[in-house]
Length: 193
Image 1 (tube, rainbow, N blue to C red):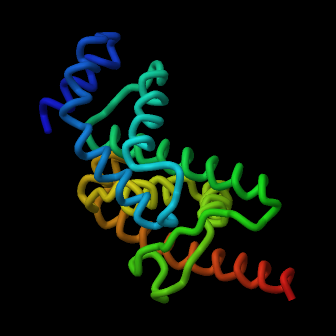
Image 2 (spheres, rainbow, N blue to C red; image 1 turned 135 degrees about the vertical axis):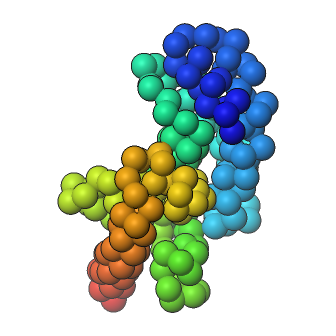
């Protein structure tokens, strides 16, 4: 972990060789994140986990002037990029089919308690954007905990708050997102009726 942090700091200082040394070390973890994202997608999804990692990598190497704090910060930003890639993909597919092809993602029971509840990734992204206008830190907690799979402690370290604050934010965000996604689902059902 210390090696990852040192390489991130060197990369942020402009050392291109640090990036080359960093990627083999973090690739497995990035691929795990991508597989986690892709697990909620349909089986014939045209974007595969490796392609998602590659897309995120291309975006990461274009990031300039990021002051990488540590490993958790890096994976949080990576998870956010992967989420954006999938949302962009889902929205473009949705628009191409005029509403008939939006990608579905099953959220884990920790985030949405009712098992079997399938929610549209674009609706989740919309809800997160709305939450961000209210409390951006809660969105960072969701991104790090749910999307990046970071522990409470890693999340606390990355956003520089206490683990107790992370848990409060996490609990609030789960309840808030559940309400917003249910509202979006009810609105969608009302339009279909």
